[in-house]
Image (cartoon, one colour):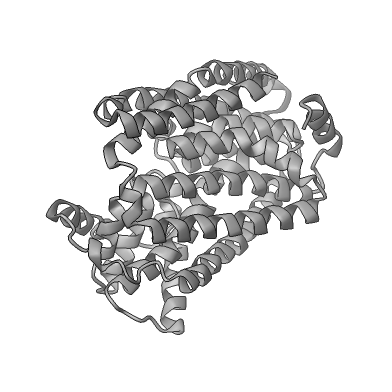
Length: 417
């Protein structure tokens, strides 16, 4: 009942935020600190919650050998789904032609162009070896302070393995971590009371800053992206529900609250604690939730990947460049690599897009145009990133024959889902 009320309040906050942004733009822009306060509150939860959850899940599970299998299966699943997202974005981009016929908005400010040029010079990883090196933290305190989820996962894995090796002597530490996990989930409940305020402020400041009228100029790319995201979600949700044999409606209602949080705040981190909690209640084991979801924020950004494939078409169509199919495949392959590990970079998708186009000597004016509505586009791709990672936990749990159908049915029936 409490979750239903929170979802209702978030939806109301979304609507009120849009109204405030349209009618009171100057006032709404000043609300952005409230949104940042909420996001910071969520960020302070993530590191201790993730650490405690993952260590308990692995050390309590006891089967160390299964961890390697889960890791391999997770990466395989991520890459298959990433390829699907790339091709769906590419296919719908060809169908809708989002970059064609938008010459009337080509008057881009020099500020935007300078910012995009700087983005093009940013490289998230200079090589594959650097990507691997960056996975391992030099300081777990620094990793937690910076919110580097993958480094926290790596530290948690080694910590859990050490607990298993120590055996009975590590029981006091396990008791502490069990208590910490329970405390952090209760902590999450308290922070979520502020979610409607954060959502209202985030939406109001976004609309107040950009203006709802800006969407008229960008209607083609906005429609194309959201249509592609919808097609991808339908495809992946129906496919996984059929394979795993779970109710589609039950899954959608379970994901509704974290998805709304991710959409309205344009922040995956804002919804991560709630999403992890929901997936555990839905029947996914703690160790799989703790491993797959944070790893997904490096290797399984479905919404961002789909957006990148469409944005490349937009940027090249806008300047009249007709890419051959072979050239498109080369760019898609490049995006599969360059999009990894940039979740913590501000405007990560645009940084990757600008860097990729710059390396191929394509004009960056299309990126500058997208910068004007990046917040609107980011809301959609962020929510899909989150949903994609939630679904990944279910699929991997079923692949490992560890999905708890009885727990799922109890959860759905107790919440009238």
